[in-house]
Image (cartoon, rainbow, N blue to C red):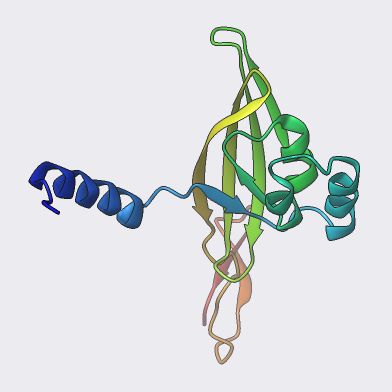
Amino acid sequence: MKTRPHMIAALLVVSIMLGCSGVSTVEQADLTRLESREHFIELNPNSLFCEYVRNGEIIRGMNIYEVIASWGLPNVYLVSRQDHSENWVYYVEDRDSRSILIYTLTFREEMLETWEIDMKRFADQRIVFDTDTPIRLIPKNGAGKGVSKP
């Protein structure tokens, strides 16, 4: 059997796009209890997305009820009058990296179309000082108090 070069090139391009794509097609967040997700699956056994809901995942094509079952209600809900879309915003805290992931989900006609992820990192907010050197308060120009080291 003869292999055509353009078919090989097309298969190579598709495999590179699927294998090297940095865009996730599924997102997972543990925002709801497993029991509530299982309850949704019991009531909706014919849903195409039962396994995603069970795992706390979202995927394009889910309807708003499947997303609610998987991730719960959003922190922020926005409606656009111009393009008839809805945006749901979820805040997911990551204590290990001291950051918050902000997911913005976009729905059109009650179907999940896409999402964006933004990460906000927080610097350490502790006050650091040398414990060997005492801090004393001294008046600053006769009014108020200032901090100095001896």
